[in-house]
Amino acid sequence: MRVLVTGGAGFIGANFVQQTVRERPDVDVTVLDALTYAGDRSSLAPVADRITFVEGSVADADLVDGLVAEADAVVHFAAESHNDNSLHDPSPFVRTNLVGTYTLLEAVRRHGVRFHHISTDEVYGDLPLDTPERFTADTPYNPSSPYSSTKAGSDLLVRAWVRSFGVEATISNCSNNYGPYQHVEKFIPRQITNLIDGVRPRLYGAGLNVRDWIHVEDHNAAVWTILERGRVGETYLIGADGETNNLQVVRTLLEIFGRDADDFDHVNDRPGHDLRYAIDASRLRDELGWSPRYTDFRSGLEATVGWYRSNEAWWRPVKAAVEARYAESGQ
Ligand code: NAD
Ligand code: TDX
Figure 1: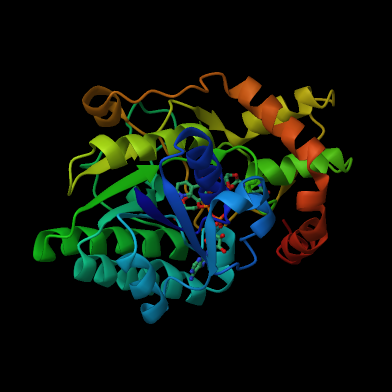
Figure 2: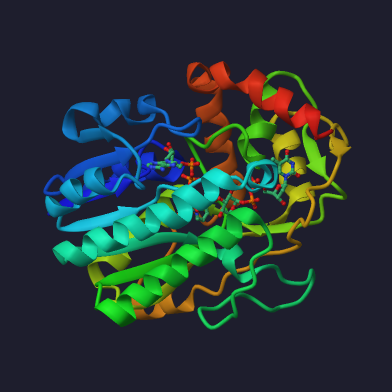
């Protein structure tokens, strides 16, 4: 099987490629990645000689056409992925998330290639705190940020290409991922690398916003499950019952680092900050038989802290610039 992985030099994509090479020697992987600020070829170093790497954009129609023509399936991770960046400059979000997805859809339509679209639970907007309510595939779309609205738009493009043109596509909407190779702009790696540097973690607002954490390897195992057993045209929500508020995450990290429980700072809140995400993944669990392996968040976090301690050369070159940007917003 020949799989084209877009965004394979990013956080989730690089983990997906490494897992695929490790666990599925029969799969031939080609990565298409534009190597934006978020892409890093060194994230693929452990498997560099076992894959084909192409540098370029998913919005480049000629390049995409040639690569899709050679593939049996496309797994589409490439995106601008950070909410805070989308508040400063939405334009690359529109180009990559909307135009890029459109470009891929037109190519898979021409060549009759199976497509899996990686999306997010943020397309559903947010939920109130302290209710049992969770997102399902029937929850109406209600995105809050430029990031989540472009992801929502890309999902709708996929649905329309399935219905109007018979494209063989599936969609997955996953909750917040954590694990190795995540960019230090994101919440968990930012706080881990702050703590390594002896800097206090930074909590937006009161820190009561809830995210539903899942280990990146569990997300990627679910993607393979959907590729192999998912029903074409279907949407699958991926989540591992990992609801935790940001304050609890910071407190757990402080404990892992042996620091005082109050050794953090409250900083400016994110405009439009979604309150709570929570996933009902029963379709994926019951129909396709997937279940997560990382069920203990604290030990998953400990392993992730270990990875950032051992891989300082990977994150150090970008840390100061990320912090300088946050400082401009008082964050
Ligand atoms: P990331 O920002 O770490 O990586 C994105 C990758 O896409 C980078 O390698 C970047 O170079 C590449 N890219 C960006 N624009 C491109 C373009 N025009 N053409 C080709 N490549 C391009 O993101 P991530 O956290 O790994 O997220 C991957 C996917 O998963 C995204 O679609 C995101 O919406 C989705 N998702 C992420 C999470 C999460 O918690 N991180 C949760 C649910 C869904
Ligand atoms: O320094 C911080 N302090 C803080 O309190 C940062 C960077 C974030 N936060 C808060 C904001 C969120 O409530 O932590 C939470 C997580 O923030 P992010 O890591 O920026 O993730 P989020 O905005 O929830 O979006 C993530 O999950 C869904 C990914 O970045 C998206 O790509 C994915 O779709």
